[in-house]
Amino acid sequence: MALVLNDEQTMLRDNARGFLGKNAPIAHLRALRDKRDADGFSRALWKEFVEMGWAGILVPQEYGGLGLGYVEAGVVMEELGRTLTPSPFLSTAVLAATAIARSGTDQQKKHYLSQIVAGDLIATLAVDETAKHHPEKTAMSAARAGKSFKLGGAKTFVIDGHVANLLIALARTAGKPGDTDGLTLFLVDASTSGIRAERTQTVDTHNAARLTFQDVNVSADNVLGRIDAGWDVLEGVLNAGRAAVRRRWSALARKRSAARSPICGNASNSAGRSANFKRCNIAPLTSTANLKSPARRC
Image (cartoon, rainbow, N blue to C red; front, side, top):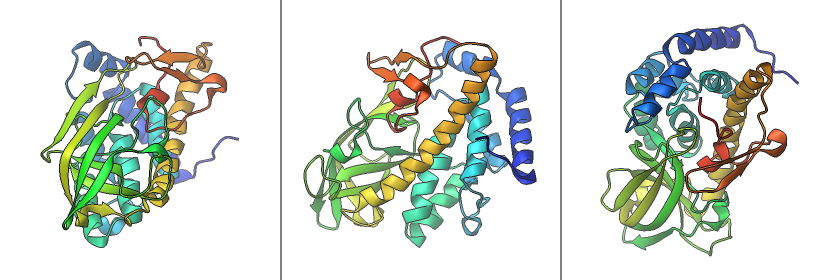
């Protein structure tokens, strides 16, 4: 069933479509890909997103954002999908903004959400540790060290992980891999000693990275939500992100349908893993392998 937009949402869609069609056509993606741009997206274009308020689309007005909802975020995601525009919109404006707005302390919201709105912060969710999406199997440790925690482990397919300033990292504070209890989310400055990021090259130029954490010191004040209860926060954040990704894919589906080309099939990423799109179902989003379009150069 098609989503019926109201007047304001229709205006947002039309403005986004016009702006991206003019400033970020497919040629924009090709240029970034062909010159092997280190960031994988245009910071100048992202600045214009910020000026239009898109970075703060889900941020409450009291923290400087537009205070809109997931329909509006989905409208922007759909238009980004129409032109295949690479940007930190999903990682920062959807995933990170949702996590902090829903579960952050007032101090955390004031500090981080205002930076997201201003375009001063690129943030992302660091969850997956293997080729398959199983957050409950998180093994990365977070051991108590006085009033801090020491994080140790690795994350893979972290969207925009190579350019993020803030990492919302899932780690285990109790229990064993497979338990949903004992997981905690941490707000981690990406420049903290002990963090190493390695960009992952993907077939469709999605921006992702593998992150390693070695004795990374994080203050207890940087826990997002409650200790050992990160799963409760994570489920809602992932659902918001999945909904946004579906909107992106709906634009691609319509575009390819119009061109009479298939949108389902198997696409392999650079590590040789396969993303299955049979029946065009959208798999969990935090593994970038699950966000792949079919292996084809645009």
